[in-house]
Length: 152
Image (tube, rainbow, N blue to C red; front, side, top):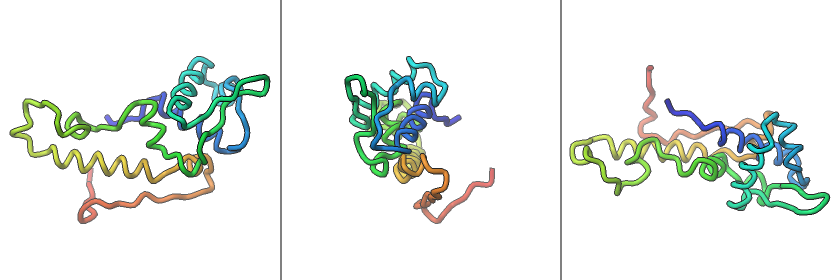
């Protein structure tokens, strides 16, 4: 099963909340109350987002966190990469230099890389501003060869 981690999902939720009013500084406790996530989880996510320059932290009595970039410049993939690491559907999709015992007889490596790139491109095509606003509709372009579809 291909599934987004809870922490990445929560990271997107928190970034989307901050995108709703991107000039405002949000306290971690306020984001915890909004999301009903434990404060330790919120702090862990905010720490990762801040270390990667997606959010910035402000100290002091009126301190907290806000987006470091405009919400339009932060993609869903950016958040996932920060929280979970680079997206890789398979080991060989992540790195063509991977030492796989099946590599010499595996015809699927190139296709997995193409599929992995398509997933990454789709996640790059949606930004946090779009995620924050349910009124905005977006489309994910399908750049796959011959628009193949699956009848599962």
